[in-house]
Structure formats: structure tokens, C-alpha cells
Image (cartoon, rainbow, N blue to C red):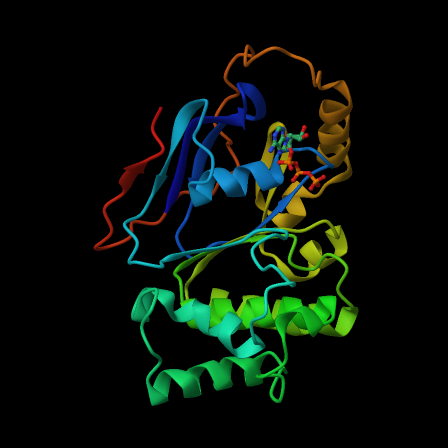
Length: 267
Ligand SMILES: Nc1ncnc2c1ncn2[C@@H]1O[C@H](COP(=O)(O)OP(=O)(O)OP(=O)(O)O)[C@@H](O)[C@H]1O
């Protein structure tokens, strides 16, 4: 389970996500939606530990090494770096082999299997910079397959990707969900969310709703998110609004035997 406890995240004390409280149950597949600038990427950065909270905290379950996989929108792979597709994907095994370890035979086979799963067999020796946008996204997913993390955070994984590749990548995500992993994905296309994601978190600087997708993506709640986003004062000096109530629609968190919430990012 992930617990948000009055979490406020931002940059130089300018808040981007205000007073988020509530629980995301273990095993949930959550689409994070909201207008541009709503704080979706900021929330994922906060969860990934890349951003310290301005206030409140995030509680994550105890995770094994490499147990949190975070795929930012971009910037995690430098296409000008002279490295092969195979080597980039093999980085998903870093938590098993360390920074300078050599791959065993079976690990090399797992890299090839992950490439086959995303439809990139035959691309092993290609320089990473020679891939198209969709092929690069497939390679990033292959790396995630190898990381094998119980908690997966994806920031707009379908941006500028053709519909066939989106379908393939959604299939992978649904497979991870069926395996019991917890997945939060920023998605812009609300039709995709309605079709594939059982739960949605609607953000607009502050939480608007969380729960079953059909109850979150209603015209009234989407309009409220738009209004909040338009009314937001970018120049507000620092966090001053009152805490929002905890999100009532958040499903109760199931107990998770063997997991002891670890305190992270407290402020
Ligand atoms: N590194 C940064 N430094 C300062 N402000 C930032 C930084 N990154 C984001 N922001 C601001 O925080 C707010 C939320 O941005 P964020 O990227 O989280 O929104 P988003 O919902 O992911 O938007 P989009 O849908 O456009 O990707 C915006 O006002 C943005 O300008």
C-alpha cells in the first residue's frame, strides 16, 4: 500500500501538488489524470524519491532493491550515447548484477526474451540512438520487464506512440497488474483510461477524486479539475491553502501480510 499523508510537493516552495491524503491499495492499477500542469509528473517524482515533500509525507511499503521502477517522460536514456539496445535493456538487471558485473548466460537470455516480448528481437546490436520513438519506448519497457519491480511508476508512457504500440504496451501493463504489481501511470487519453484502467486519480494541483474510473471521469469532476487548474495562481509565493479532506472515494487498503510500511520522505 502507498499512503499519502497530507502530502504537498513542489519546487522552491512553490507547491505543485497540494495536501494529498489517502491510500492506494497494493496491487492497484491507477491512471493519474488531470490538465496540463496539474502536478501528475510531480506526484510520480515525489513517489520515486526524486523530490522531497514541502509538507506531509509518503509512506511506501518495504521494497527489495530495485523494487521501485520509475520511468520518467524522457531523459533517462541519452540517445547520443554509443550504447546498444541490448546493453540499455540489460540495465534493468542492475539490482542483480551491480554496476560492473558481467551478465551470466541465463541473464543474457532473459534480456533477449524481454526484447522478444516487446517485439524488438533482432535489434540487439543497434545503437540506442537509431531507434524510432516507438521502438525506444518498447526498449524502455523491456528494461522494466527485467527490473521486475513490485511498484511501477510510468510517466506518460504512450505519448507520441502509434496505436499498435500503445496496445502492446497496455497489454504488458495489464499483465503486470494481473501479477499483483502496483502501477501508477500518467495518461492523457481519457478513452484509454476508460478502456483499460480500473482506477483513476484525478489531480488538479490538489486531489479532485480517486476511485473506480467510471466514478472519477465524470463530466462534473473533469469540469471541476479544469476550473481548479484555470484558477490556479502560478505566482502564489508558497503553500498557504487549508488541507483538503482525505479522498473519500479511495478504496480501503487491504492488509498486506509481511509488509511493514517504511517511512519515507518525511518532512
Ligand atoms: N523542475 C521544475 N521547477 C519548477 N517548477 C516545475 C518544475 N517541474 C514542474 N514544475 C511546475 O510544477 C507544476 C506541475 O507540473 P507537472 O509537470 O507535475 O504537471 P503535469 O500534470 O505532469 O503536466 P503535463 O500534463 O503538462 O505534463 C507546473 O506549474 C510546472 O510548471
